[in-house]
Image (tube, rainbow, N blue to C red; front, top):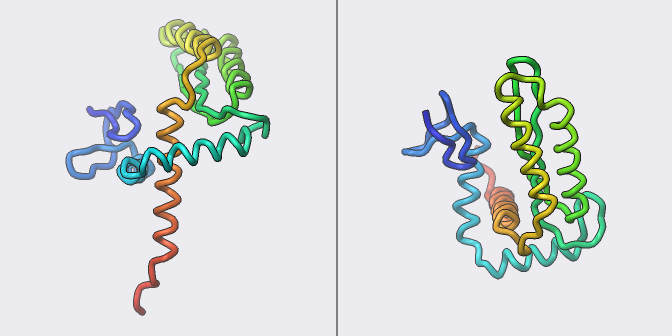
Length: 169
């Protein structure tokens, strides 16, 4: 049993290994590679990309910024089966609150129906949404900086692939 070295998800069995690290799957392994590249990008470049993102407006509603990461939390249950998740979204505060309201509402109606986890996780996820709606974190958050850095790293990798000559025939 281990945790993914990229997303920190709990791994009961399996996973993809690279050296001493274990990852959920190939997607997390690729993300870890991008994270290594992102850590080498200067802070000023990341700040410039964040400013450009704010100037372009909200990716959801095209409204004005500031843009940040807003996470909605949801749970649903059916008897002995319960599933909960957290979904980060890059958007303006208004769109983030709408997403959190949706997660809280869904959890309110379909979260309670599982025993025991539905009864335990429903108030937790609803509470996390309420805290997210009420909090006004500094802008930009570390989460946004990480996402922007990973996006820049992915662009760099894609650009390097395009610049590579084709293999000899």
